[in-house]
Length: 219
Image (cartoon, rainbow, N blue to C red; front, side):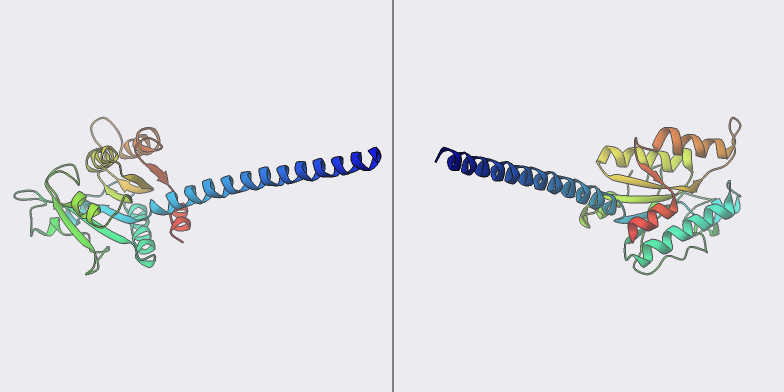
C-alpha cells in the first residue's frame, strides 16, 4: 500500500512539475512573440509616410555634395514608398522674391522626382517643415505617427525638422546619404553630413537607416 501510494504521489508530482515547466516555457515563448511582433510593428510603422524636403531645381543646380548618388538614393526611396502604397509628402522652400520664390524656375521640385497627383505638396518659409505650415495637421488627420525623411539641407531644414518632429512625438527615420548640403567656410559638406547622421540624429532624434534596410521594412 505504502509503495503504491508513493508511486502515485511521485507520478502526480512529476506531472505537475512537467505541466508547470510546460506552462512556464509557453509563457516565455508568448512574451518573446509579443515583443518581437511589437518591435516589428514599430519598425513597419516608421514606414508610414515619406517626407521629401526642399529638393528643388535651384538648390540641385547649385551642386550639393554627392549630387548623383544623393539623387539616386532619393529616387530609390521614393520608388520604394510608391510601390508600397505609402503617403509621400513633398516640401518646397519658398522665398518672398528672387531665388526660390513661388513660380520661379528655381522654386520647382527637381524634375527627376515628378510628384504624382495623389502626393501632397506643402510650401514653407522657414527652416522647418512645421512652422506656419499644415504639415502636422495633415499628418494628424491621416493618423500618421511616424515617417521617413530625405532631402536638404542637412544643417538647416533637415536638422530643425527632425528635432521639432521629435518634440511632437513622431517616430522618425532618415535614409543614410539621402540627405545633402554644401561646403561652407568652416567644414566640407561630407563632414557636415557624417557629423549629423552619426553623432547628432541617429538613436537620438531619428533612426538613420541604409536604403536596403528601409526597403526590407517596407516589404
